[in-house]
Length: 299
Image (tube, rainbow, N blue to C red):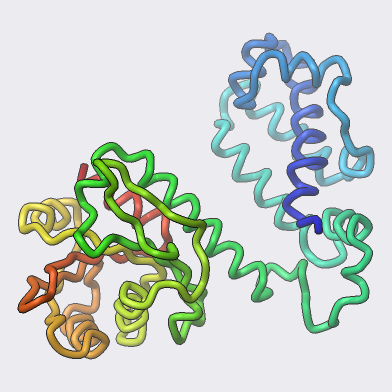
C-alpha cells in the first residue's frame, strides 16, 4: 500500500530540493546559506550538490516544476520571497500535480496499479473526494495535537473528565463525521497523555457540541473542551473571542443551539456545571490547529 503523499516525500521533495539547491548555489549562495533557506542540513545540501540524492527525471523535466524552481531561486536569492512563501507556492504546485491525470497522480497509479481496478466511483486523486477530505481532517488534528502536547502547561487546562480535540468534515451531520482522540486526552502527572491517533466517530460529547453549534449557524469545524475558569474566560475575551453560556443540565445539543442562535459569532461556549456535572469551556475554530493555538495562547 502506497499513498500519493509518499510519492511527494520520496520523489517530488528530493527532486525539488536538489534543483533548488543547485540554482541557489549558481546564484552565489554558500552551502550554509542554502541550508538555512531550504531548512535542511549542510550535509544534505552537499548530498544534493554531489548527486547523492535520488531524483525523478520526470518531475525534474516538468515545465511547471522548472518554472517554479527558477522563480523561487530568484526570489530566495534576492530576498523578495521568504522560505514560508516558497513553501506555499510549492504546496500549490503539489496539489495541482496530484489532481487526477496529472504528473504525481500518474506516478502514484504506476506505483499502485491496483488503483486502476478499483471502483470507478472512488476518485483517489480528486481533492474533494471523501477519502482525501477525511485525511485532511485527520492531518489537521494530528498537527493540532502536536501543538497541544508541546505546549508547556496544557495539562493544567485538562478537566477531570478529560479533553478532546475534534474536527469534522465540511458536510458533517453526525458523530461519525467528526474525528477526535479515542479515550480523550488526560493529565498524567502533569503531562498531557494522548492515548491514540485520532479517528472518526470516537468522540460523542465534544462532537455533539460542535455539531449542534454548526447546525445553528456556527461556521466552526473544530473544537476542544478545557476546564472552566472565569479567569480563562476573561483571557479568551481579551484575545478577541466571543463568549456564550449554555446550560448542560438538559439536552446539550438544544442548549448549545440556543446559545449560538443568541450569540451567532460565539467562538467560546461554556457552562458552569451543576449536580454531578463538571463545569467546562469549549473553544471553537475553523480547524484543529487554530483551536490548539487559541488554547496555547492561554498558557
